[in-house]
Length: 251
Ligand code: PEP
Image 1: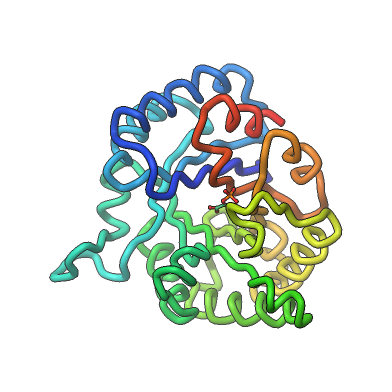
Image 2: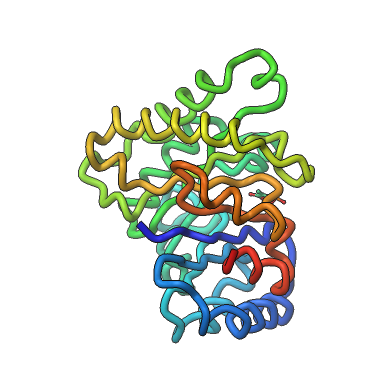
């Protein structure tokens, strides 16, 4: 299973800046990318085609959409469909990011519909899950992960190709705060997610990648990526500059 080194650029970067950063990242990493690593960038929608074109000729590099709606087309002002993401060169879609859940108000059920719809529409999907700090303090980590995964995966076809589905464990309290989860906390949460994936998908559950996200930096990536059941990382702040994200990709 290749490790997936993913960058979430959130609402940052214009077309020119995004393309320049993607080109610089490719220059810094493409010739050295180990066979067991893949690079993925989630640019803002307006730069998706530009970054996809930069990555087009490069093996192991792909792009994705940070969000999508559950219809192919229609009167849904402001929304974008999986078909449109694919048309812009994306291979992946992200669902359930904590900012979509907790800033923009998406609930588990909508996240679940998006996850299933993205997969049947031909995207590879990364479903994000993770507890808030008060939920961790209340000893509810496992219960939160179980609920988010039960609902988030409910309508995913059980014959899904495991290479098309990933789960990102992103404790909300570690996102953009500089406060990375400790190795013990990561291993425990990822083991819990693995157990749930095995229960849902049987043997196939071992082949679904589980990424860690939350204040990953060049200085802590090598340790995190080596932990049990960590099959990649999802990086926000430290992915915005090619110099720092290239160190993470090659860590
Ligand atoms: C994220 O946005 O998914 C994320 C993990 O952000 P950061 O790396 O900045 O914590």
